[in-house]
Image 1 (cartoon, one colour):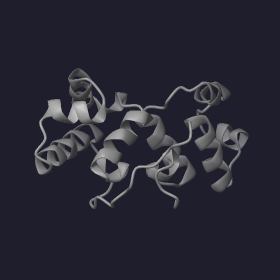
Image 2 (cartoon, rainbow, N blue to C red):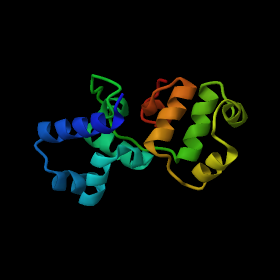
Image 3 (cartoon, one colour):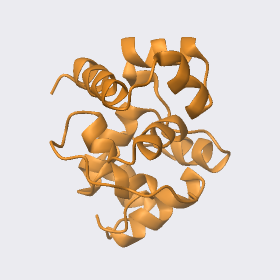
Image 4 (spheres, helix red, strand yellow):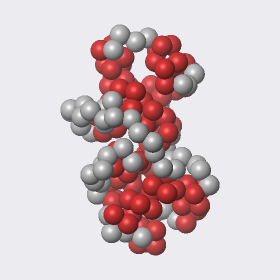
Length: 147
């Protein structure tokens, strides 16, 4: 998987299909044009909140956006829990505790403290967490009710 090119290509395709310029897209998603350029050059920097905003705007899965799925799978935007709450909900549903996750990963307690304080995880962390928990990124961030 080449996340860098997959995300950029999918975003370009979605913009073309929806007849949107980068300026129009940035305005509709509520970010600056420079931010969109940064995402296209390095999607690894995109945070959960913005990743959800892009996926919600195009009503597609995050997996589709990053090239992990071939079908768009229509999603309807909704209200999302702060990530600190969401990760605990997902951990419980997947049969993990913060302690058990920390034992099998690099996610020390500082990550949970930062997420509880409102910090948003970046795309690489979301991918890693979803892989460890055996769920989709959309489930992990609260967009899907099925793991």
